[in-house]
Each structure stands twice: as structure tokens, then as C-alpha cells.
Image (cartoon, rainbow, N blue to C red):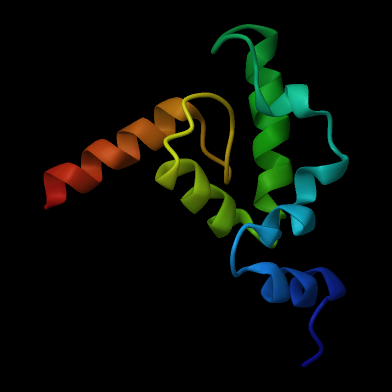
Length: 95
């Protein structure tokens, strides 16, 4: 089975922080990933950002980076800051 070029590139970059250059968001408007609120037109921005993340080869690395560095704002790895906070709380409660 042949691997997609983006997938091969992402696999090579997964070590370290080089994954960023393989991210699907590289050509997107950064404002999509950093909406000014959690309501109104910002909801559309979040949905668009999440759709871009959904097709990204390095989504897991991005999310891991955001959690590890405690990114307080923006959509990272397909999750908003509220969703990442919830995931952290669930992880702490689980043990």
C-alpha cells in the first residue's frame, strides 16, 4: 500500500518540533485557530479550524505539544482550550 506524500513527510517530522512544517494549518489563516470568543461568528471559525485539523497528518503531535506546553488559547490538534482543559481534568480524575 502506498503512503500519501503528506503522511510520509509527517512521519519523518514527528520527532522534535519539526512536525509544525507538516501541519495542515500552514496555509490557513491563523485567526481561524484563535477566535476572539466562544460564541457568535467565532463558532464558525472554530468549526473551520477543527475541519482543517481533522485532515492533518500531525494532529496528535500538535495536541500533545499544546497539552505539554499548556497552550491557553486557540485550537490545537482539533481541540479548543476548553476541550483541552476538560481532557486534563478527566485524566487527573482517572488517576
